[in-house]
Image 1 (tube, rainbow, N blue to C red):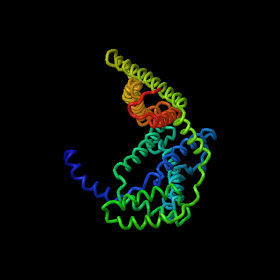
Image 2 (cartoon, rainbow, N blue to C red):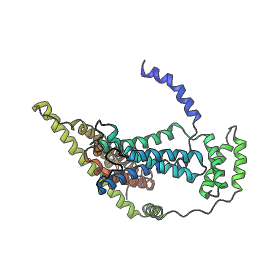
Image 3 (cartoon, one colour):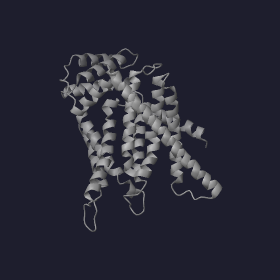
Image 4 (spheres, rainbow, N blue to C red):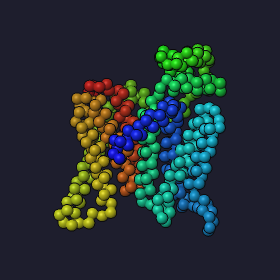
Length: 362
């Protein structure tokens, strides 16, 4: 059976599944909380074990691995989300789910080796790759299940739940009213229900807005400074350009090394070593990222927005592909590089918002 025939057989099943799934809005799904808590848990666990000398809970016969605590936390998270109402409970459930998954995936080295090797060299790369796949799955769910009229209607109903619990925020009320207006103005069979829900929701008084934490306030203040200050934007743009140039140099060095070793293998009969295939794959990913960096730097002067878009794509390729191999070679020492790429990507997106298409950097 060809791939095309298989796709035709599975396509109706996929349409039926997608038709029966109603996706929550990104704010209500708490996917970021799950992913962030998982990443922090792995880093905190590795740091704690390193500083404490890898203690073990048990005796000469028994060893209670932290993967068991991870499984228990994932079970608790599932039960909380199923048993209780409220966005606060769902947020707690999402955090516990991430912590549990982090404790689980941290021991991946034991799962894939015969001798249960926690320090298995590719473990760090496998952990990072699992986070990349989790992120991509979140994005895939958003793309495959676009918010329809049913999702908009249910989001309005959930705001009534928040109002009943006294936790309805003004921004949530406005967003829900906009969603219900869209359903009410459509030809949906739920239009009348949407209008009645809107009347009820509009008549309710939201709770007092909650003040964000200090970290959120500082992040918002930094964004405002970048958005309002040309000088701040100029410094951030220079940092992005410098990072793209350094990325090009690194790509060039890696590619030259792979070419040199490959030439030696073909002409001189060198032994490439067990890590050469991984190095070659890393060089391939780096070359793709470097192509975007080069093109972005080339067009940056005449079209800042397009140049930033290409540099952002190069950073995305670096984060999703190249850094997987970096974790293979450098273990968790590659964390700083991955975090730097994430910060630069966030900076690129902030700059793109300040530079309309066709504009040039001043």
